[in-house]
Amino acid sequence: MLTLRNISKTFNPGTVNEKKALSDVSLHLDKGDFLTILGSNGAGKSTLFGAIAGSFVPDKGSVHLDGANITNLPDYKRSKYIGRLFQDPLKGTAPNMTIEENLALAYMRASETHSPFSRVNAADRREFREKLAMLELGLEDRMDHPVGLLSGGQRQALTLLMATLVTPKLLLLDEHTAALDPATAEKVLNLTKRIVSENHITCLMITHSIPSALQLGNRTIMMKDGTILVELAGEERANMTTEGLLRLFHQQGLDNDRILFSAE
Image: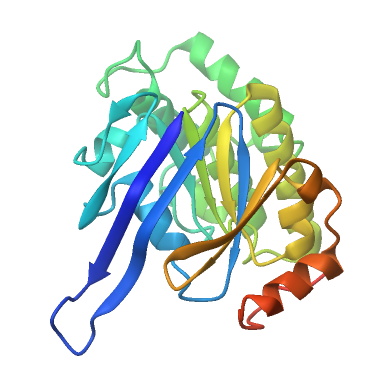
């Protein structure tokens, strides 16, 4: 479904700021896989997402989605098939536009049957309302409210809905709950798990929480210095504990940064 072959990327080559962000990274996900990604700051996690989403063209290697080589496909064309959430709840929505207008933009961008210049109809609005009601945040009664008035958790839940309103081939979650308070983060994680499961979406999620990395999805990888050090799947992952993964993390020489070892 998703195949990365020997992806390498160096930023600012030949300068004092040269940074080798990815080094011969290869990875394959089957349809429906949910991969969680751990690693210290600077490990290459977000750069990996950038390579998949088309934020840049890799120096070497290729990206294949559903059998098609998309290595040189611009990000705005990939966005039709790839949903992405960022750590910052302010990203991914237009704050001065209403909830309905934001949903309409996401729908038109990803829909195969609508052009970007189409108008939403009554049936579309009913669907938006039904989808919003599933979030259980009362947003279905605030469709004419500007998104900028929502809380961080509400905006992130809305962004998640926008990214999956038309089921994407791939969903990238870049620490999408890290900026939220624990209770809101848990709610958004539960929403994520439900939406991904119900729609059988292939998903990659960067996290700094070892418990979340083990509880969500069916595969886990650890990254360091732009490479994949460890991959856990199947029985090995099912039997792995937070303490065991923490020991493995230390054995690989990874740093204790941020909330990586939090049990929350």
